[in-house]
Image: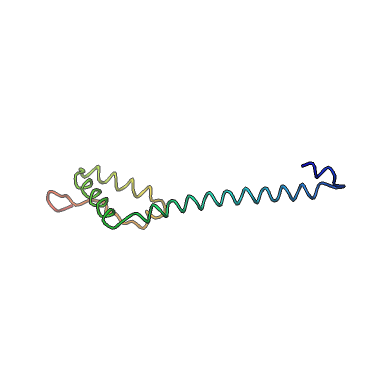
Length: 103
């Protein structure tokens, strides 16, 4: 920054340089965020209905193989991880007994 040495008062020029550098950093962060978001969007574009169905079928099969207490624990854990959205999730206090078809 030798050019500032030739200025009578380099303060304003240096402040402007600092301001522009902060803007540059902010823009670089925004570019990185948008590139990451674009990558997620590209991945989502490859998700198909059959692949979602396959995953959900696997989840259902896994849940059916679990004993009652493990299933209740898992559902409770999922509800906790859901944060504020979990308040909208209405889970029964008891689960039906698969063997008898009753609670």
